[in-house]
Image (cartoon, rainbow, N blue to C red; front, top):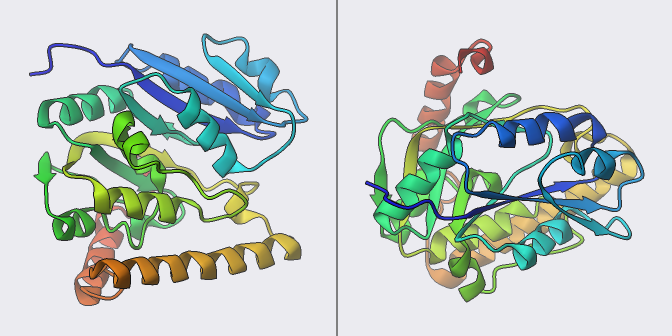
Length: 273
């Protein structure tokens, strides 16, 4: 049983996200876990994002110009003082006990990383919830449990901050789809990873999100960066002599998992929280 409450740094980058800032910070304020440091990184917003954030008890850091999501997250890493760190997207949400359960699992098992459940509004086959706590110590088992080679979302994880700093993990700046590079490296290098039941990260499908922009320049950038990410993933796999479930091994099992998810999470599952 956890007898102390480690400080958790929650890094929330925001760029012209004024319509989401209040709801995101209200979500943070309503958490059952109270020992939290909320770091809002205003990445050169030209709207009222920073003004709204100042109304809450958060650490607000402002970039003079828009430098991108990766730079904002790196600023959060540099500023964090917690024992654990989580990267939260301003237009998403978590269930009330999210941090309580994640910290408890990480602290009680001594894990470098805790992986929580996620509900993916757009792609239900990428929804994953855990029914029981399990600890994984081999790279093969960590890669299979998380499917990180397919789902690079960094917000799935609570990291021990010393672990990130020990390995000098940084987000590659100037790229889209930056999560995969960071998450894959971390999952592989972690000595111990725990998956956590009763945790739900709500990944909403927003029309104006980075991944949903439709102008041709942005689409070309996204395609180019996806090729960059896949190249990194393939090279990382070859260099370390590993197979990535769903990518270059276990494809049938991954397809079966997708079909199962379609059945389990059909309908508006977000309303069943």
